[in-house]
Image 1 (cartoon, rainbow, N blue to C red):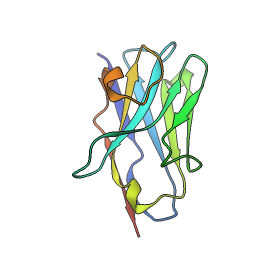
Image 2: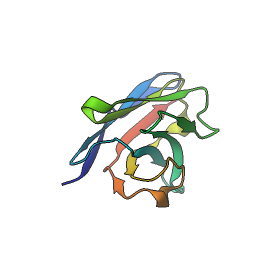
Image 3: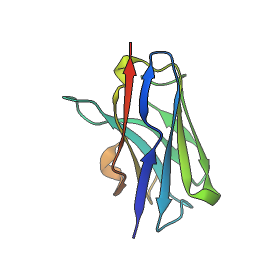
Length: 123
């Protein structure tokens, strides 16, 4: 069974940091791409970042550039989203997703999804 499980969400004050994890089971990341998406109440789901597991290339939405970074531990089938200088507008449910295709910020490119982890940033 293919599963993605997010963890690391929580409540943090503005300016603080969180590190989200996305752990995969049932497959390995080799040749795949992993994306992070978020959805705030009343808003459309948006792409946050993605990483190519083939070459390690990362991509970030303009809203998080300079604040968020991604990394991976292929042996552990885990990717991480390090979120620094968090703002209240970062509050959302964060989802990780996987595809055997290329890295993309478009959610329709992904077919494996986690259940999400809540990130709440207070001012």
